[in-house]
Length: 286
Image 1 (cartoon, rainbow, N blue to C red):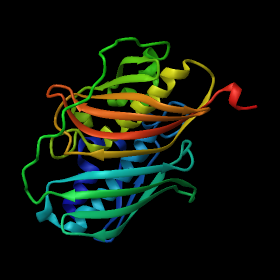
Image 2: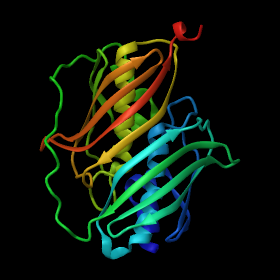
Image 3: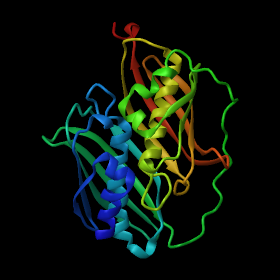
Image 4: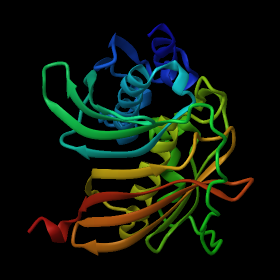
C-alpha cells in the first residue's frame, strides 16, 4: 500500500496535480485534490483532463491493490468518463470501488465529487496487470494528411493554464480536425519513467475538444465535455506524444470526435478513443 501511495502522490505528474491519498485498500481508494489555478481552464473551471486523471489514478490504484504487486506492470486497458458538472474553484475528491478482480484484469467504479458533495463525474476503469509479460507491438498509427493550419484558435491553446502546464501546442486546428503535440517532459512522467496515463488522457480530451473548436471557430460560446472513452494499448512510453482528432459527426451543439494518441518517433498508436464535446452557439440557444 505504501508503494501505491507513493505512485499516487510522488510521481512527477501526480505531485504536479497535487494529489493526496486519503485511503488505499484492496476494495476502496479515496483521493483528494485541492484547487490549483494551474489545473484549470483559466476561468476557475477544473480542466476535464484533470478529472479524467483523478478517475484513472483512483481506479488503477484500487486495481493494483487488488491484483497485488506481483501483477506489475499495469496499464488502464479501458476507461469511460461521464462529466456531470463543472468544479469551479473547488477542491475535489475521487473514490474508487473495486467491482471485480479477475486473473489479470480488475474493474473499478469511480465517483468524483466536490468537498460539499456535488457530483462532478463518474467513471468506469478496467486495469490490466501484465505479470511481467512482454508487450506486443502497439498498432501502426493512422495519423492524418499532414496539413498545417492553426486556424483562428490554434494560437490560443497555451493560454489555458492546464494546457501550458502540460506543454501542449497545436500544429493543426481547422475543418473539424486537430493535431495537438505534448512534448516529453519530466513533469508529465509516471514513476515508471514513461508518460503518465493521466497526462495521456488529458491530451486525448484536449485533442477531441480542439477538433470541435476547429469546426466552429472563435466565439463567446458555452462549451463542455459530456464524456470521453479511451482504450490504452500499452503503458505510455517516454516519448513525445501527438493527438490526432477529427469530428465524425455533428448534431447541432453536440460533436462526436475520434482521437488517436501516437508515439511520434515510432509512429505507433498508444491509445484510441472518443470525445463527446458540446459547444452551444447563439443559433442553438433559441
